[in-house]
Length: 159
Image (cartoon, rainbow, N blue to C red):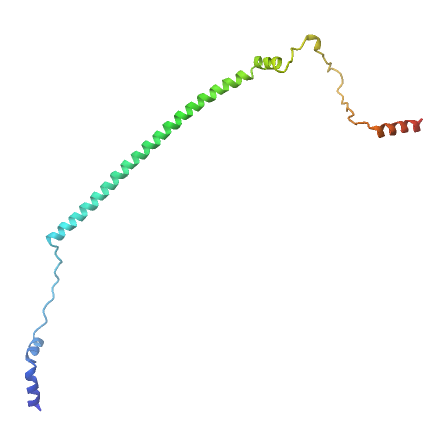
């Protein structure tokens, strides 16, 4: 049977396998990943492009800020000019209004349009307010026919 195994061993070379078992396994060593020259250039280009993009963005924001400030300044100047125009218009209208309601204009309107005349001295009536203060209530009743009949009947009955 051993001969049978040996014949089958002829197909397989176990001796090489046994020699490997006797040898010690190879030592592993740590090797740093070294970047190649092209990788270093690519990293440098990436870093420079990021820095360039950041500087470009900052410059864009500064220019945009100045544009916006200029537009706002122009709007302020436009509104200031409109304010001055409206202020002068208001002053002109105030003068016009004062001219229309002056006493001379009112007097001309009263005499010319309304047909009024100046008051004469004989039309003035003075009231003496030196006496006692008293209150008089005026009767605002509208005496109708039935009220007059009632009053006449009451006065006849009372006599």
